[in-house]
Length: 199
Image (cartoon, rainbow, N blue to C red; front, side, top):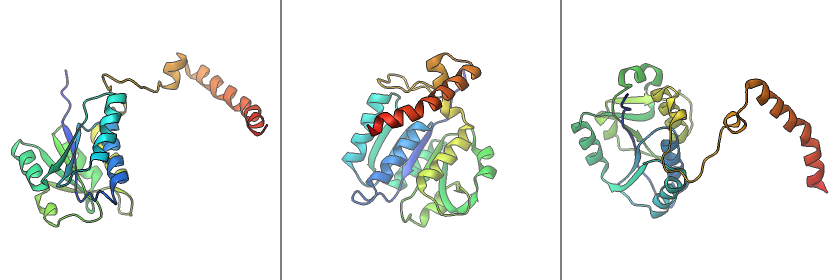
């Protein structure tokens, strides 16, 4: 049985009044795309914790959320246990050149908010860039995790789920031809649905 590497996201610079929604999305993305947990460095935020814990209760899995952890301690402990620290930043090396060097290893993925301490650039084993254009930390994390897991994260199982959305062909037990027929049927039904909505 193949043992999957452990991946944890360390969120730096969270400001409860400004970053709550975005940090929640960092956590949701981390969970959905294969990470084991989220560390919200230095501060606590009950609303972020509660939202992510609720998702785990309903949608399954063992994703954890730790808060108020000093970020330097988190980095030091991770490295002392043999893990790799990856800092996602525009000022880094291209992701496709780094992932082959770290795939299969335990990784702490550092994701900053508006500003991060300059010190993290020196403490990270790799500073990794996802392209060279402005975008959000959520998109950077998603692309990194997909590259790291090679797409296998999309097939991850979440034990204990109370809710699940079945894939179309799983739901219909269909072949590609039947799936095409299903989509065509939905398309033909659309005008009728639009008319009913306007009535």
